[in-house]
Length: 217
Image (cartoon, rainbow, N blue to C red; front, side, top):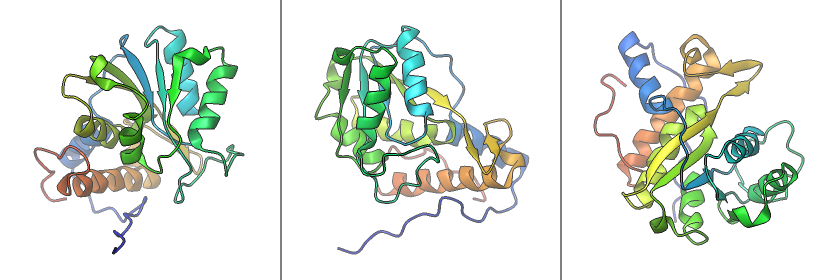
């Protein structure tokens, strides 16, 4: 089978108009929403401490009674500098951190086979019945929220309302947020790369496609 070309995490970015910047922000970061109590908490796989820190905060704040943790060993992952468990599935480490934070074991379910966002969602369906819930708080990097949301929307029942609960990330000492990404070289490149992924994956049916792409991009 011919391998699909990998989309660069930091592609070259064209000159952007203010209108394009505004639309990129809305698509990639999603519209801002206040977190509300949901039936469950979904943790996308990853090696950034934000994955378990936000999940811990959400659980102790009463935003969900069950935590669904995903993540195996990704062959292409660029691991966080503090990650010391290269051979361990991401979900195993995240679950361990949640238990250390006082979250009861019976409140956690996990899968440990997935290698990417798409598999995070697909394999989570093997360990949790999403048809039994109506709302889901999902945890991920802020600039990954748009793609993660569209992955959930493509594979979970349409009756499940998904709400982002995100954390900002640092690249080469620059904290990238929805409010400053357009002013940082790394931010522009990362956000534009996410937009390319959303378009590409949507076109091939891996995630819910955009109803309208950004003119000129």
